[in-house]
Each structure stands twice: as C-alpha cells, then as structure tokens.
Amino acid sequence: MEEDEKYMWRCIRLAKNGLCTASPNPMVGAVIVCDGKIIGEGYHIRSGKAHAEVNAVRSVKNQSLLRRSTIYVSLEPCSHYGKTPPCADMLIDKGIPRVVIGCEDPFVKVHGRGIQKLLDAGCEVKTGVLEKECRQLIRKFVTFNTLSRPYVTLKWAESADGFIGKNVNRTLLSTSLSTLLVQKRRAENDAIMVGTETARIDDPQLTLHDWYGKNPIRVVLDRHSSLPQSIHLFDGSIRTLVFTTSSSRADSVNLEYIVLPEEDYCLSRFLKELVQRDIQSLLVEGGARLHQSFIDEELWDEAYVEKSVKVLGNGVRAAQLKNIKGFTNRRVLGVDILKYIH
Image 1 (cartoon, helix red, strand yellow):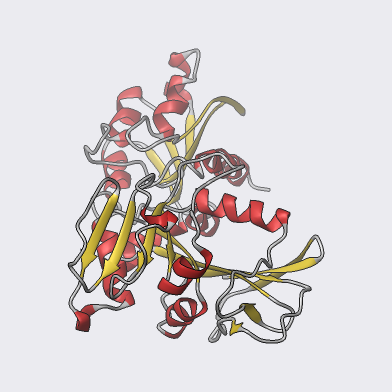
Image 2: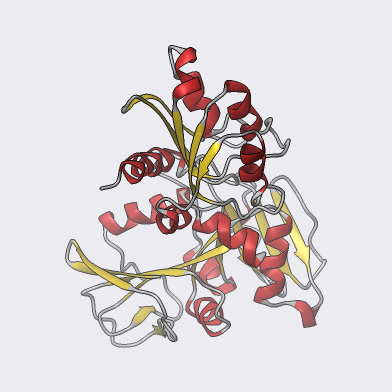
C-alpha cells in the first residue's frame, strides 16, 4: 500500500467516529505525520465545534514539528468563515508544508477554494488520494450539495412471500437483532418518514432506544389531517414535521404543519421543504405505497430489506425495487436475510 493511502485510510476510520454526531456537517478525519510517525490525529465531532484539522493540530505536543510535517485530511479544508474559522488559513498559519486531501468539498462556498488558498500560500498539495472512498464516506453530504435533496434510504421488513403486513393490524416481522440495526440507522439520519397508514396502523414512536445518538426529526404524511391527535407522532416529545393540504390544525410544541396546495403535494416538494430545513438525510420506514413512490420516481439512494422466514399468505405487498444500477449485498441476520441495495 502506498504511504499516502495508508494514512488516508486512517483518516477515514477516524472520521467515522462522527457518524451519529457530525451532521449536518460531513464526517472528516485528519492525521499529521512527521518523519514517518503519526504525531497528531483528529476528527470532526459535532457541528459548530472544531473541525478535524483543528483537532489534529491541537493534539500535537511539539508544535514546532508542524513546520516539517504532512497533514492528511479526508475532505478539502474549508476556506470560508462559517460557525468556525477557515481551516485552510489555520494550516497556512501553522506552516504545515504539505497537505494531502482525499476529495474536494462539494459545498459551493468551499469547492476548490481551500485547495487554491493552500497552493497560493506555497503549500505542496496532493488531491484525490482514496477519492472514491472519501466521497463514499460523505455521500449524504455530497447528495445534499449536488442534487439539492436529502440522501434517501428506504427500509422495510417483508415476509418470505413478499408481504410487509396485514391490512389493518400491525404485523411484527423484525427480529431483536434487526430492530437494533434499525435504531442504528435512525441515529445515522437527520430525519425519518412514514406515510399515513403506517402512522395510523403501527402508531410508531420513531425514537431511539438501545442506541446512542440524537433522535431524528420525525416526518409524517397526513394529506387530509385525518390522523388522530392521540398517536405517538403528535406527542410533542420530538420535533415532528407534518405534510398536509389542510390548515385545520395549528403548530404546537415540536410540531410543525407544512401546508401544501393539493397540486403540489408530492415527493419532490417534500424533499425541497426538508432541504430548506437543512435536513440532509432521510430514512423512509414505510409504508409500501410510500416506498414504491420513491422507487418509481427514482428518488432513493440505498435500501435495506429484511427478508423474514415468516409466511403471511396475504396482506400488503412490499414495494418492488427496479432499475437497480448499484450493488446488492446479502447477509444472514439470525434466521432472516438482510439485503443492502445501493
């Protein structure tokens, strides 16, 4: 393995520590090397706090070594004032002579500017080291900034004969292990969406339990404001967005009604509204009609499908994936099969 790639892999591993906390900022890792030894490391922990480069520099005990070191960073150093000062300026001020970058920042205020600022200051800059892997690491951030929509993940469990449940009663198909994985995915996303019938029949809380992290924003579709106020999604415990065409209900604590015209009640408009609220990733948990709409309109990025050994015989058919251009990974999950399509 090439020397630069070795240290960039370390950056990627460090960055993943911010998986459940960095959003809406991207996950970033940084490593500082002097004379073939790592002298400093850091990653971006939380939005508004120090970036990976700053944390890495702060961790170096002998700051004089920085002037003959190389810093590896998985994402282009920022060049603008946001919630924190520009990292590119800090690297220049510290006199770090060589900067190795995984991928360019897709954010319009940074894209290429951080690299140019370093070059103008006389730094040696190398880009594109493990670029594919570094972009994959921040794929949600990339989608948000290049496609102007949240990164969409579909998730459902289906029976051995292709049903997600009965028509009127909640049907449990997930195992304790797959339920734990659902909690993990919720923690990794900014928001979680369900349709009207899922909210009515399953009455989910859509909260985290048995997993570390912040609760995602809950999003529910209630076109005609027909859902009873007694369901968990309206309990005010967590920020919840309700898409509707009716203005009969008023906002309350942690509950926002987004009233849309009937002709504008569609997925693209929902996603646009989420972007305006800086929601970069969306987990869609149900139901089948909602999943199929995302699939048919090609507004999804990855899907997790749990195939149960249970047979239902009848009920609500699971959504049908089509036009799959990526890859499908399968693994045994207890007695069930988990398919990951991306």
